[in-house]
Amino acid sequence: MKITMIKSSIGIIREDGAQTATFEIGKEYKSQGKWQDEIFKGFIDMGAAHEIGGNAGPTETKTVKKAKKSKSK
Image (cartoon, rainbow, N blue to C red; front, side):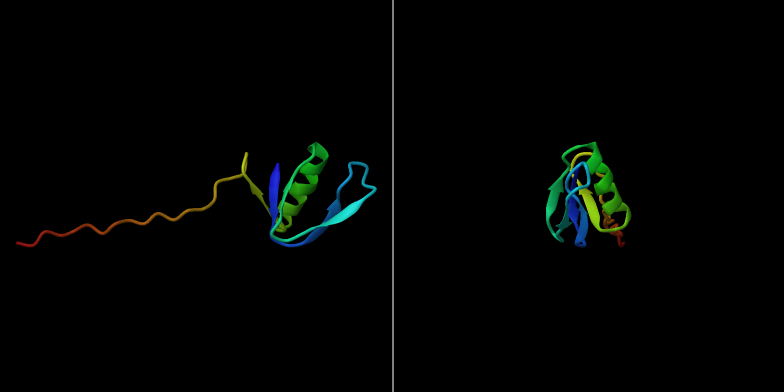
């Protein structure tokens, strides 16, 4: 899983939880295993990060409809 941070947050960076670090706004981070996927999902759930690439949900797009030309007689 890859994420990009939209808010700086503190999280663990070792599986045993013995070390923490600041995940900085605007930076991308790649998961190092299932344990870190859970940390990243927590960041996403609290609105501090967005998932990118892979299985990330589609981004919202707007479609623009063209106006039909009317025929004048």
